[in-house]
Image (cartoon, rainbow, N blue to C red):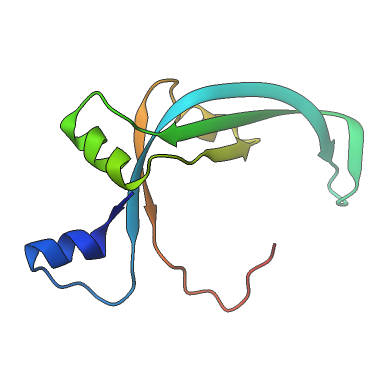
Amino acid sequence: MIYREAMDAASGRKRNKNMSVRAKFVVNQIERSQNGGYRENGQYDSSLKTEVSTIKLLPVSGGSEENKKFFAWTPTGEIQLGTINPEAAKQFELGKAYYVDFTPADVVEVAV
């Protein structure tokens, strides 16, 4: 990951105090599976067939100077996304790289 604060310090730029981190990940696996689903009343029903796409991304490691710089900050990691939205799943292509920005969210409560 390239820490924007560190880069800004090196370049002399100033940003607000909220740190944000930009990383660059590449899709290395896309899986499709079928699971049960939820009825309108919120009850889980294993007989419903819902397609789930799972997208796995790893940090970039080489292939360009930019990738080498990202790898220097984030040599390891994994992001795994699961979605039941086919249009969202179509946004990810196997072998394609994506920027990922981490910025603190202003949230009063976080459900986990």
